[in-house]
Image 1 (tube, chains in turn brown, red):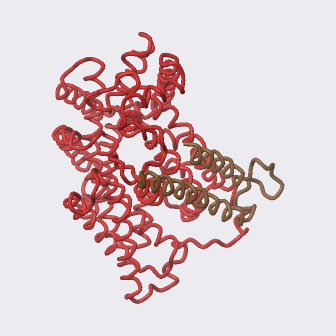
Image 2: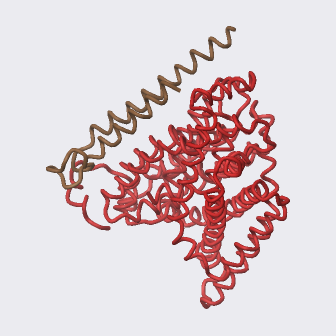
Image 3: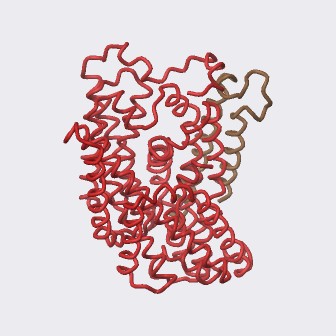
Length: 68
Length: 459
């Protein structure tokens, strides 16, 4: 029984770690200049900034990590 | 799309669903946590770097950053790896024929080998490559049909979960993404986080030739970055198409002798007659085209990177063509003999990953250090690579003593990476630094917004 409790804590710690890891990558991506990630910078449409794509992918991944 | 096509072949469909059948939903981690972070970092650092450097292959970069010996060792390792992978793919083809047509395994393997051998030698590869996209679409249609029809037969996702849970206590963790240390599968959470997420998957996505080449085939740098990002997005949905069918197979056909039979079995039992034939043909054609591509890659790599450079530097094209054909035939015979080795592993996915863990993690370590740190010296990369490969061989031979789990390929990947990384750093710090100008352009330097003008320009 105590091992099950330990497994529960370790797995949720891992999930939290994964979320923090993904968040750290997102924070790093936000530091990139727009010209590096945006097509036809600086007046391109927002969807041409691939940082938004990364955000969308990580949100889906984060939800999956927490729920499954 | 071409990046996903390069990654997802029939072997992956069979191997991933077989993995899900045996080990459960945790198999999806290879597509979710393995791909997305690695591909996004790759899209923003490695792809622009390769692009600006004007290189097309990872061994080419390693040869320039380190020494030509590193490139030569890479070629030897890749030819050996491809030779072994050929055997595993032949085994997968045999499994499809055995399950769907009832043929004996060795007959199925021999039939595949003879057909592929004939059309590879007669130059049919170009036609096969042209039909790759069509095969992908058919496999996609087949996988979607299996998913939908399978879920309808079972009664939905909730019923699927109930049926798996009712199979017994050993299936209680089958629908969890992270497994505890006590799991009997190779996928305990430290293996997934350290071995797969931090090493094996980034090594695959940043160092695998087929993947890198697909990304670098774009029109301009932004398209290359965006292409990798888009592939990462598509990969989020792949587990639904290939991992969930493995779970459906478990619910519908529990107790299969070999988990890799799960997808062929679903094709046989769930799909309607017309679609069954079409998907079977697509699977078999895709498997054969993978064999043909691997044969072609191994022959090209051997002739151009090894034979031409180290054995016979000047000879006619006819001579090199003949050498390539002899190698192709030899590899095919070797692959037939190697195919039954697949039974030593619990499934073809584990076999593929174990073999790839020999090359990818040490390569990734020297690639990462070479790209990001000027202090790394040329000879250190060579010594680090050799140490990593030697370390992997020792771990493979003594895995029963060194690791307390079965099939510890993800732990081996992690430690091979750590060993290569440590040896490369230590040797570099003990050596004289390289003249800084000799490394210009070979080390990543992020210089801020100066790339604006180059974003839309072709290389």
